[in-house]
Length: 133
Image (cartoon, rainbow, N blue to C red; front, side, top):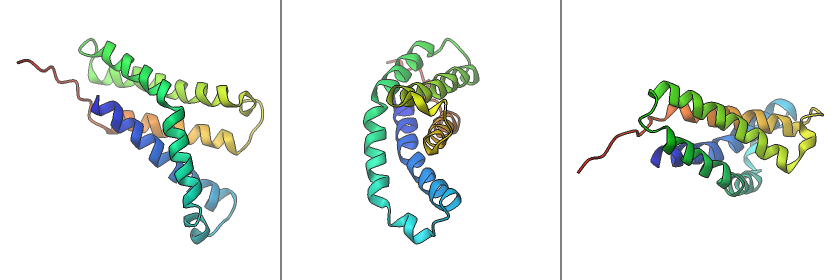
């Protein structure tokens, strides 16, 4: 369960920070001070991301639980990565299906969130320990 929570928190905290940097500095050519001054928006993004990802992370946990001790750690991470990537796209599609047909800043959001969650799947140690008493 800790593995799932680490990935969840990593994604909902790091993604908005990356988005602020990429959208602010690269796309909108803002200076670093104005990016830092948008902390209220980043905080709202973290809260909304946390709440909107509850269903996807519940399914992630169920998949993780089902895969426990059935596959190697690498194969399990591959399966979880594929699900994670797709769950981000599905969540954004539910909110606004139009982001697929038109290029927008929201498309960048989807890429950042999906890449962040996949990175989280791979950087955190999988806690597949079998506990016996």
